[in-house]
Image 1 (tube, rainbow, N blue to C red):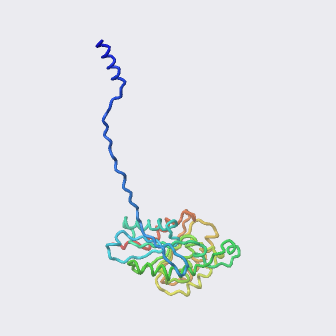
Image 2: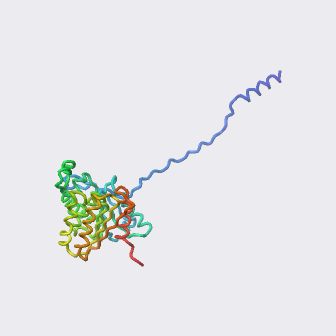
Length: 281
């Protein structure tokens, strides 16, 4: 009798679940912190009759240094355009110590052929881009609204540069030729000098002869981009050789291993190192 009961209890003990004590560890949720690399302004513009995006990158030591800084103005400088990769070059130069600290200002574009291209008489271009040809208005926006906005809010040294690629490079060259006093330095990467049949390049000799002899810097570069891009660049550089005044320091660097799509980042890095080189110790 007893052996039967013991057997039954043993069988039940083998099949019954065994309660075990488990310690449940509460893992804290990861803390999420936004990465802030700059600041963005919605700048009301009377000239453009719209609110325009202006993005700012400041050197890491800006808040505490009390110093004034040079300013690089970047065309096509929207957050979804070229602002991040150009401000990244400034940040890298600061961290590594290869270039001076500089404030980067990105000026966003909306209708690029309207804002960055000079008027054309080409009927095909007019038909394809009916809003084209108002670069003079955009230049007034930069000169009369963007530059004063930055100068009033940030410690700027008075040293300025303008940088752009493609149509923005065309705007850089046009600004240099027509309003050279606006900036101290100009960087035009793969400028679309083919626009309007290369007319701007053909006019460059006369405009260069009319300039003052104030110190200026002009940096030009072009990839392996075919005769449509190369031919007007050849005209421009020939006019620079023949007509540039001694106060102008200019350079043209062919980048035959680059295309229109790949040239900008490396060319911009070289321009940083040229314009903002750390003084020799």
